Length: 200
Image (cartoon, rainbow, N blue to C red; front, side, top):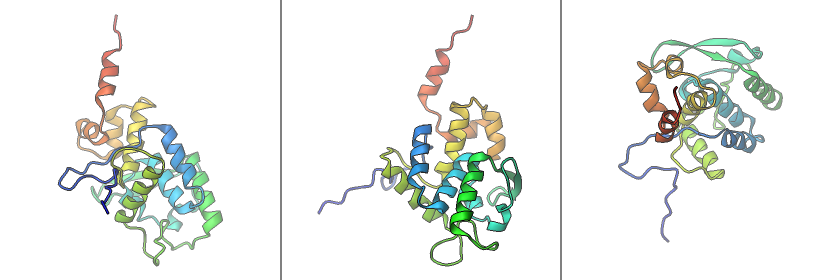
């Protein structure tokens, strides 16, 4: 039997660069898809609403966030850069947290995104698999993985809300806005659209 390659999995030897989810409609579709799995839905919503690296989200424990309300934030130390960053709870995250706590009823010392195979947190490899499955389920073309959540936040902030690269760069703790542009995979269409703006 001929093996069919997963179109969301890059070909062997190719450069592995994951895509953001570029349409709000697709973000909403995945959120709806995950309604029956509060842990996964919370991970997805926190990822696309904060721009925090997945690895840093996976280190969170229930006690770190269980008393937070919309508008609250906590400071986290990034594993990669060793710099401080903030995790902000907006209304969407707050609702997802409340649903998770009401449904799952985790213990204070549990990891927020605990693996189903014990007390340890999910691993980044497992998140990669989950995100590939979610995007494949809603028929998204492209290559998706753990970085997709963070990239989606930056891409939508830029293209839908007009946030400048300098601000997104600061949020990402990137060394320069040009790094952020490459990271977000800004497409030729956005450059073309800018050139169509009339001056004078």
